[in-house]
Image (cartoon, rainbow, N blue to C red; front, side, top):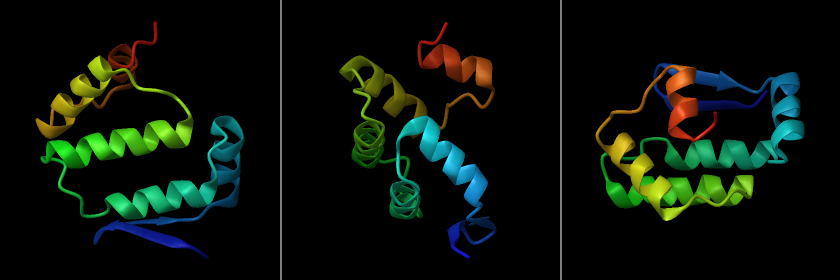
Length: 97
């Protein structure tokens, strides 16, 4: 069983069905998701360059370009700890109508 520790108090266990479905829907390999999650463990999300690198990594993994304007908006929201947590607000932020 594969376990990821994002913080000392949060452990995510590999659930084949969940990750198989995620892989099918996104075309992103399960191992790539784990590698990305591990790479940001303990990252400083107040640091603009760290956040930009993360956004670019996710964009590359998902094969979805992020326009500079959207990247700037995301960086500002993340570094200021101002990301909405509800789905409607997130959808609006990402431009889904």
